[in-house]
Structure formats: C-alpha cells, structure tokens
Length: 510
Image 1 (cartoon, rainbow, N blue to C red):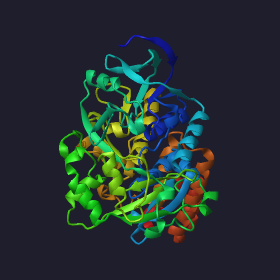
Image 2: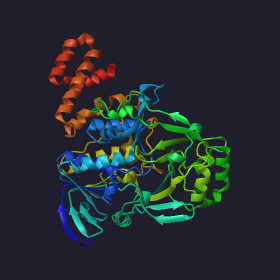
Image 3: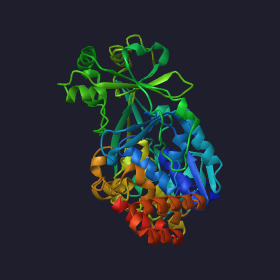
Image 4: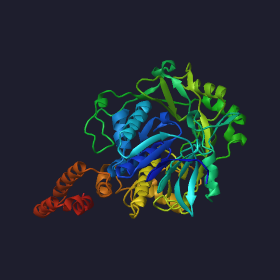
C-alpha cells in the first residue's frame, strides 16, 4: 500500500469524470451513498474528445435506456443539443435511432453543474495513482499528492488515459486525450494486482475553421423540423427552433493520391502504432487502403458548438503528419482554402481484459472494485455511459449489501453490451451495433421505459412523480391494446397491475 495521509471516508469512489464516471457517480449518490468523484482535471468533466454528438444506431437506444433507468445523459443532451435528427426512418421501428449534435462545451458545463448540485456527491480534482487493497478487497485509493480516500466500493472509469500516448506522424509523446495528463502509475498498480491489460488505439480527425469552409460546394444536412428527445422527461425545448445544420462532402481522387503517396509516413503502416484500432471507425488512411476500389468516401462537417468556429471533420480520423493532414483537407471539395485549428491524432492506451469482470462489472480479482467505459475495451460515449450507470448502481448495492442488478440480453442493449464483454471479451475497441442484439425487434428506441423504468424505480433512481406518469402511460397503452377487456385492464391499472404486468401484456400484443 502506498503511504500518505487520510483525506476522507466515503462509501463509493469513482475515478474519472468522463461519460462513464459521471453516470456511475450520479447513480451511486442518488441511491443514497456518500460518493467521491475524482478527476485529473475539473475542466474536462463529461468532455467529448472526439465527435461532438450523442446517439445513432444502437448508441441512441443505449441513451434512452440510461434515461429509462434514471441516468443523466439523455437529459443533458436534450438541454444542450444544436441539432436533433431521427435516423433510419425509412426502415422498421426496431432500428429507428435518435442522434444529436451537441454543443460540446455547453454539454460538459451542464453536466458538471448537475454533478456539483447533486446531494451525497463530492467532485474533486486529483490524479489517482494507486489502489488500497487488503486481502483482495478494495479499501480505497491514493492520489499523486499522497491523499488517501477510503470507501467500500471503487469504480474505475479511466477512459483512454491509462499510459496514454498520442501519435501523429513521426511525433509521439505521453498524453491523455486532447493533450491532458496521462495516468501512468495506476496502470502499473493494476498489473501488480494481477490484472491482464491490453493495448488499444483510437483516433480523432482535425478540426477546421468555419470561416474558411466553402459551404456552397457541400450538401446541407438539417435537423428534424419537429425533433424528438432522448429523455422521457423532456417535453419541449427552445433549442428546437435554433438548430444548426451539418454539411456533407466527399474525398476526391487527389485525396486518395496524397494518402497513398505518404503511407510510408503513416504510423499505422510504418509499425509505430502497436495498439489495435476500432474496426468500425477506421482512419481515413486505413479506409483508402482497405477500400481501394471506392472512388470517394463521405465527409461530414459538424459544428462543435453554437459559439465556436471549430468544425469537426467526421470521417477523416487520422494519425498522419500535420503537413499531410492539411494537404488532405485541402483536396476535399469545399475545403480547398481551409485552415486547420487542431490536428488529428491517434492515441494508444491500456485497457482491462473484460473477461476478468463479473456481469455486475465487479472485478473477479478484487472484491468491491468495478470498471466501466473504455477501460473495459469499448469505444463511444454511449457505451461508456451505459456501463457507467450499471457500475454505479452495483457499486452502491455492494455497499448496501444487496444483490447486483444485471440486465438480460432480452431486456436492453446495455445487457447485450455487458454480456458480450464479460463472456466473449474483445480483441478490438468494441462498438455496439443493432446486429449484435438478437432481440433487437423488441429492444426498440420507443419502448425503453416499458423495459427498464420499473427497474429504475425499484433501485431508487426514478422519482415517485416520474413513476406515476409512467403508470398513467401504461394504463392508456393497456386499454388500447386490450379494449375487449377494458374493465379488467383498467382495474389492473388502478391497482398498479398496468405498471408491471400490464405493460408486458400490452407490449406483447402491440
């Protein structure tokens, strides 16, 4: 155990305030546990180091499930979106998926404000470098300054910070995302405890200045005129009439030629990058090589916020040298005179092999120690948040001496995600897809509350008022589904039957 001084006693400690950490800490605190949320930098709470968006196929389903359980991501994006759009509307309801462009700066500030105002929850800046473990039971954590915080449960949500290394062409240096401090010693502590770690890699594209884009050469991508929302509590938003468009363009033959001419300088082909990257979010140089028969690839230009000139170049993730990145950008229609504000980069990091976890996300090696998010080998804000709320719930229930909450694959995409991780593991950054869910026809975007709100209510994350509204909705739905048995169904609704069994009956018939 690392020596230091005792700084505080809590019931749950969460390490890392990304999307997993925020959900974990809020869940534990709302369930009545004295919770400490430690983060390397208070200015990076709920930060979006990559794309400024929430949702999409499978991912949007997860956000709705988080909200149905009583989590925060859906409410937060409803407060801070700059565009809302329902995808796949030409297909069946099982694959309808909501996606929002976020004002990424407002998103993180709003989430931070929620955390700061939540009872039982303390937010503090600190670099955790060691775990206090006695006889395979976690007791607390030790920070870089020597402060020792004690708790019955600890949740690790360290994202891509564990031994993080940024790679850009020939340039390499230790760093977390967006040039933040990396976490080095905590990775060493996990190895000492016997955990098996793997090396993964992800990346991000360059950001460009709005005033240097020729939008006349691109195709406008507006939001929905009457947007839907992620949270079941959101009824309307003043932002609905103030949406910002995205823009579509394509790579060109010149783009492909520039990349092919500079493959010897590409870290992923020169052998510099050791970590395994995400198959479903490849870099532009990887796409050009793997799909050499394709004459062009889609590029989306996405605003990063209402009050910034930065645009995210979706589809152009790269670790090429800076000069090559600029040449690539200027070969794309609409970007011929573009100015780059931030360069793209690849980042390597350590992840825990997730088969070392129980379905509750508690580690098998150390009792009371939970992990969630990209440390478990996943990619994406939504996958992280879905794990985060479950880890927070189960960390709190561990403190309370209660059985863990484990969602079945037939109940939720979150159940599919966690089951895949802990039973199969992953040899690449895992991304949730609708095709991974064998019950996807039942796990629709529009019925997440029917599936999960009773669970959220039972564990204390859904308020009495919200549950009353949920029951009223269930009674209406049951009467529509079974009009021939109106008396029995309505009577069941009054007795609480519709809040439980009646919902399931209506869902089977509807």
